[in-house]
Length: 345
Image 1: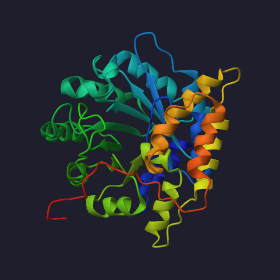
Image 2: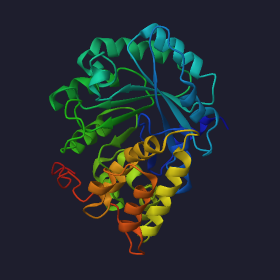
Image 3: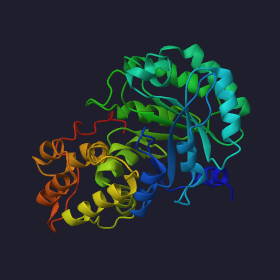
Image 4: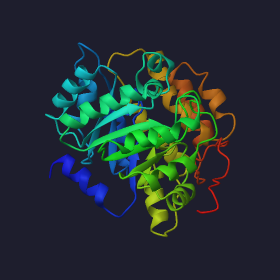
């Protein structure tokens, strides 16, 4: 079965869908391999392909499609605003085993949105309308969109919903923050629930999903088709399997400190680049440790951010993780108020 057919079948299924969020310089082929070892999601998204006038799909991102080790469908994500280039790239990517083509309307990085790409396009609904029309015409696999609830204000969301409803997209993923909000507290799950009620296509919820009980509550109270998890999956690769366990009504099992250390070792082994300097390898791992450390005892992040050698890196990991106590890996401060939806829910 083609990946696009598998993806379509998953969309039509009954079980909630779990997806790994696209994260630039994180959701590589190597990271997908590690995450899948712990159960993984049902669907993967690539890092975004940068699309402009003379662009060609980046080889290392293509590898996550053509060398996909998971057996799960992989969605190819595009970012840009050049319509002919977007059309050209979408056509080209469909020659590879992609599950779907996804348009990024949510990246909050200033270097991206200042170029009117990613989340920056939310300031230009007419341009979004033109891009959606052009891509829908040439995309013959499922066509999906990932967005935020607005650029500066949640008040922009109603108009965005009307815009998305005009196009026959197959799935909309909504990160419940504005672009300028970045990753600060206050995810608007109520607006994602509104979209799930109003739109003709399925909706995935994205934004600060950090535990199985919380995930189960979000699914029930918002009515979304599933969840897309990013930073929470870096911190806790067991999270996807924990959610499935909770949805079956079974007891969730938590990893021990030593199991978390083994996960870090697996990340280290998969992220090594031959010939790379020791200091650069340690710095590369800090990208992951910044998230993992949010679920470890106080003091870990302070210490791990200051190491410069391999020996010191593993010394700090051993100091905090050389134990057999279960760890929830929930962020010590999850930065999110308790879920509060309107009384109708």
